[in-house]
Image (cartoon, rainbow, N blue to C red; front, side):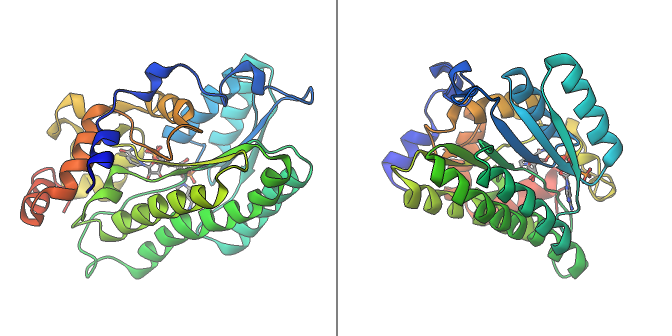
Length: 295
Ligand SMILES: NC(=O)c1ccc[n+]([C@@H]2O[C@H](COP(=O)([O-])OP(=O)(O)OC[C@H]3O[C@@H](n4cnc5c(N)ncnc54)[C@H](OP(=O)(O)O)[C@@H]3O)[C@@H](O)[C@H]2O)c1
């Protein structure tokens, strides 16, 4: 890994540089209208934190996930608290028809010049050896993490490029930085998102459209509450407290870095882990995951 990347990964928090153009009040309606963000996986965790932060900044929102009750409750509380418009959009992004429907909404917003931010955040993990896991679950992961991101990004770009402004955040993970035994498909899909985002940003340089691969580390959310994690013996307490971040801190760091850094790894400890993950012998990475119950 180059010295430049090492330096980049160990830089101080982006958040110290002040709010980015995506949070600044000036973004709010050059044309007198509120900016709009579409967030997938908005019913919980990091996606819900993005929704709360963007509502506070004055964005209107389209909130995508499968659980309609959660989306309805979030949309109505954000409308009441911040006087913004929040529209729930129930969809299973492992289903190609549903993804097509969401892509249609993204394209319509873009064509109407009403899309400012697309956040491809929906995701989930599994625990176990690839040989033992159901192909269906791994296939669903590829659909949600990769194919839905591809599809929604493709739908968003024409409108963003025409307006020469806007952003796309693809939520990857520090897990995209090293081999991840016990979660092979997860790490590979997150690596795809990092690589895809970096290449896409290079293609878009100078267009006014910004892409980010957000790589959170361990984050408090519902992600690790799934039965698969409990059954594997994973417990949050097995990891030192400093390794955990709140979903709010992750969303804040991401929005502040958008337009400044293509790869955003919130937290110095996570940047160090991403870096070490590249250099550490495979046996050490593997043993570490075994000890925390992730393989
Ligand atoms: N938490 C962490 O430690 C961590 C670390 C690194 C990266 N990440 C990434 O951060 C992103 C958000 O995860 P989180 O931590 O906030 O987890 P979370 O609290 O479990 O939230 C996951 C969100 O994704 C949605 N989702 C899952 N499968 C979906 C599907 N098939 N169709 C539509 N929506 C779906 C869920 O909504 P419904 O269930 O209502 O559909 C939920 O809103 C994920 O991409 C995850 O890989 C998390």
